[in-house]
Length: 262
Image (cartoon, rainbow, N blue to C red; front, top):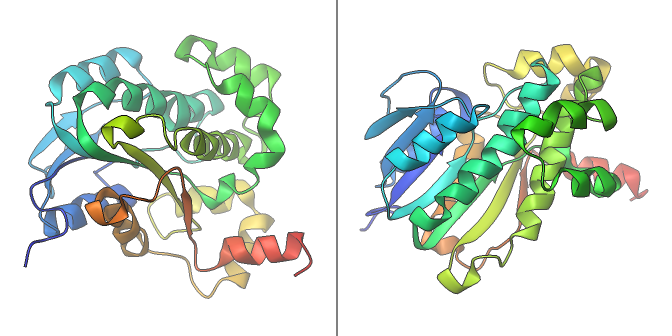
């Protein structure tokens, strides 16, 4: 029986740990040739590894030049937690991710799939449309001013929340951008996941995180998230376009029920 990703070349950013590591492992197990991208040099589950800091536009340009043509999928998993400085969070989680993805479009094969790792933290994106619109043309040099003039600073992990809100909106906006080539974009939004950065979220969000953990039966695991990412990279998901899929043990449904008195 043919494996689900057999014959495909998949780029996984953030492949050295957590969800990125598990996504790379699973994509390889499902038959893909995996090209890993990370700041940390590791060769687990990848055919080749490319070192890149996504907060640096020069390194992104070098990465795109080095990657081959004919890539069938990108899993944009690399990201910083809310404990990192706000400017870095926005550069890596939003500006760098977008710059890398858009620069890779000419190198993608027809029918390719882009999967962005968003977050439950982006659930309330529709309440921040004005700031999201202001961020649409955000460049690396503009990030510091954006943080200063918008609700995207360090307090309460707001930079992280905004980066994921804007990423979900960007995914929806690109539902049909490359439809003539069959290139699709979707997002996956995990809830709290037991990875090396879970402690960063608990530290930053405090009582909010503690309440979430009481409501949930357990935190997620990377193995809960990676299969959904890998499925969206496969041909079986060809008619799923511009969609954000929560993978959070029901937490987003719980929050929506509370918001709408269901």
